Length: 229
Length: 229
DNA sequence: TAGATTGTTAATCGATTAACAATC
DNA sequence: TAGATTGTTAATCGATTAACAATC
Image (tube, rainbow over all chains, first blue to last red; front, side, top):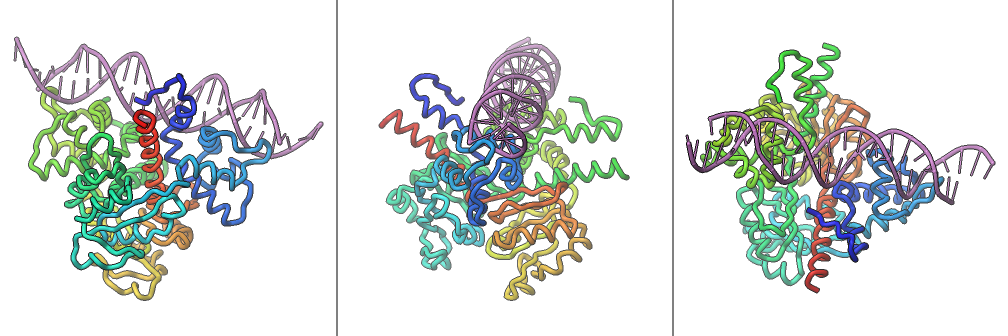
């Protein structure tokens, strides 16, 4: 799958070499570190940071080691340094233009999410085909008809799109996003999107999350019943 | 693997034996299968099902094998049988009472999510401390003051709660949920919750999802630049 | 029987963990 | 120096994949 070329591209291989599981946790570390910085904490040990983030200290140190050696033995990590390094790895310095399609309650909630700018994103447009919504202002942006998507996406160079429509509309929205050059899709609609090969979709589904929680809850309840019936 | 074993111990062990990665994908399979059933499909091969769900056929068959042998060699799986078996594994037959705390746009969107009943959940109460919201009806439920949580949670036996408040309120909401006997928390607030040891928290964070997408997008863009500059 | 597809095995790959030497 | 904590190693554990015998 991933090619580990031991030829020439060592830096690329090193960066590309950050494991997927680690990538998935970097935003979490970043968030916790920013909170610490805002609380006035300047230095933190792997133990303290790990506890706050809810991971083991060994895992945290391993994860951070893929970015380089930014700690001081016997002391810990400088919070601001870690924030910068993780931010750099995640590309927070750049500013990704993002569009949201679907301005129901969910789209509204996402648009009003405050953290876009500080995390490397710029919300450039909201689309919906409901006449009652088009033209209204949400989160400082005027809602546009969905038909405007291609022009806006091309003009702004949008590569990341969020689908917040009902499930029934999601696939055709995804098709249009792909057609408009969007390569990464965050899908909140409860359907599995079919997209061509280079396009990356992440799915966030309330029901799935609840079902996973319920599965574990069931296990724990069973466990208790068996131990103390 | 063997069928449902004979001793209570063994049943527990068998259930406990479904790997975490598989548990995470069962809701996805369930969703796809229900869609197939609604489209009138009666039988499906691992190849077809895997393609629709976006996983490899080998992985799908391995996942299903942890539940038992419910396919027919040379033929495939009966859609209805798989739906039942996965549903049973996920505990969809039972009906988990769920509460949502925070009835802003996000809470609104979650409350109006239609799939609760069909997936083994029953939304029993919505809480918010905004005077403009308390007493109003959302998704067929009257929004209650947050102070009512303990009584309602205990009365209904609520073990699963959803946090859809701003980050600033999330920790104290979580504390109250735990205090009220809630053991599983789905957290949409952009903070890392601290909870005592038996409590399970799943965090859904827009920024994290976008950052992971952006990381991969960056990689692919770099890749293209290197190949065709 | 011939073709198709499952269920399972064994190999590989990737992630986690514990432990500790390096070093502040 | 003594105590603390990182960065890294090696062992373990879990997940994925390819392949194919079993069998419909």
